[in-house]
Amino acid sequence: MKRYEFFISSLVFLGLVVFREGVKINPEKIEAILSWPGPQTLHDIWNFHGLESFYRYFIKNFITIIALITECLKWGSFEWTNDVNKTFKVMKKKMINALILSLLDFQKVFEVNMMLLMLVFVLFLVKIANMLLSIVRNSLIQEGNI
Image 1 (cartoon, rainbow, N blue to C red):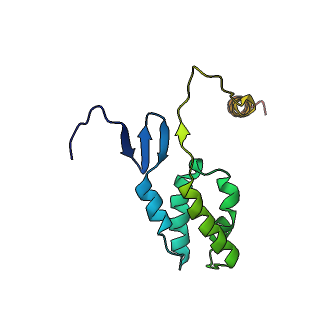
Image 2 (cartoon, rainbow, N blue to C red):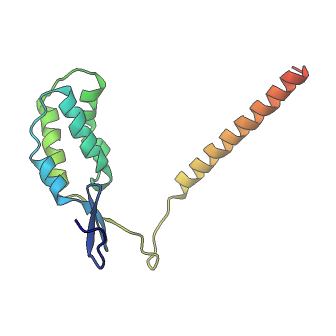
């Protein structure tokens, strides 16, 4: 393996292929998922769920689709029903048609969801307010005013 490579069109990194247009799932990982046998144990379900979760941003409605498999993990017992098996097969098929995550093009107009940003900011302010109240309360306790 070469230490340095220049003028390459794509780069394989952590199971992803990074190229000029964006980022996509490494085709070798897609093949591994497609050839994944049906889980036989709870550990097998955890492995599959973990691998699929790594690529969640590439699969539209990921959380909704994988919900049945996630439910299998919650109870700590292995119960592989027909519905869960269908979900397993759907997730494998979704990997074939996975999205390409593109980089932002600042030459084009795009929309940023400000509501989420505002929520994070408010939560940050609440945390600071709680810290300040705790400091004031502790100093009042030490002075004997409470």
